[in-house]
Length: 113
Image 1 (tube, rainbow, N blue to C red):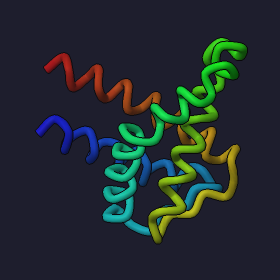
Image 2 (image 1 turned 180 degrees about the vertical axis):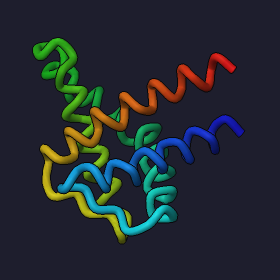
Image 3 (image 1 turned 90 degrees about the horizontal axis):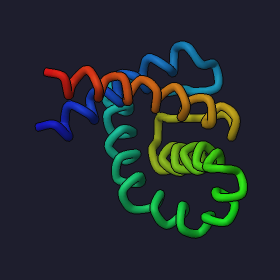
Image 4 (image 1 turned 135 degrees about the vertical axis):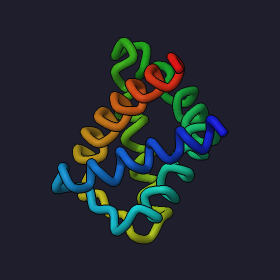
């Protein structure tokens, strides 16, 4: 149940961000839910591989390259789903930072209950 709530929160935030950020386009809420699910799966399957492959760069940048990895994962998820368009890397970068901040705040609020 916890996983479903996290997916729904991520989908709602992503859909809301599509109205705020002009470089992120999500057609409808169902597409946002599918996007959140695919993003969660990519975070489990692809992101650890990318982190290991880019470990030297991540160490040199003191972990800041992890933001770029998040943006790359979001771009991959957007390419896999019809109905989502992200205009470039920097829009994905900004989208990933805001999405992570909202998800972190929602997780803290959800864990308190």
